[in-house]
Image (cartoon, rainbow, N blue to C red; front, side, top):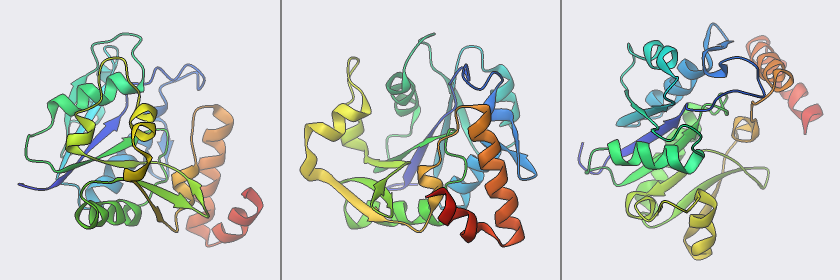
Amino acid sequence: MIGSVAAILLAAGKSRRMGCCKQLLPLGGSTVIARSIGALVAGGVGEIVVVVSEEGNEVAAAVRSYPVRTVVNPECEGDMASSVRAGRDALAAESRAVIVSLCDYPLVSADTIKLLTVAAGDSPGSIVVPCYRKRRGHPLLVPRDVLDELGENQTLRDLLRSDPDRIRRIDVDDLGVLLDMDTPEEYQRVCGIVQLQSSGTYPNFERSWL
């Protein structure tokens, strides 16, 4: 779709700190990666590219039934920026902005994705950062032409620092933008939050976590 918002879902991590493939861990009746894709789809993203590693055949197979395309990060020990570049280069030319989403943040809500897609139209030249209670989180929304500036020796942080005036922060009512998941302990915390959300006691847990 011309002018649509696309997404790059980064799923090429080796999960060394987790000790197993975190993208395929069960979460709330689904999996980590399926939940991440679901939020993007429900949030209105028009195109989703999932970036996997050269060893990510199981991850690629697991998302085959979803409305996504997969690409491989050819850099065996590549960093996050190399995965972003691989995903960017696979996107359709028509996308005006790109949500850079991480499987490490599986509790980001569809409502947050919707706010980012709206911000893409309201602030077409801005890098949009979701903030929960003044704390910056993920995912980022980056104009396509800005993402095209990401060179071989640059990181996303370099893009943020290169022109602070083009950064726009938006407030979201979504603790998920802060909840990274790299270790077994963090995974158990995320699972606990999902259980508490379903039981209606999530707000009390949220206050204790913060």
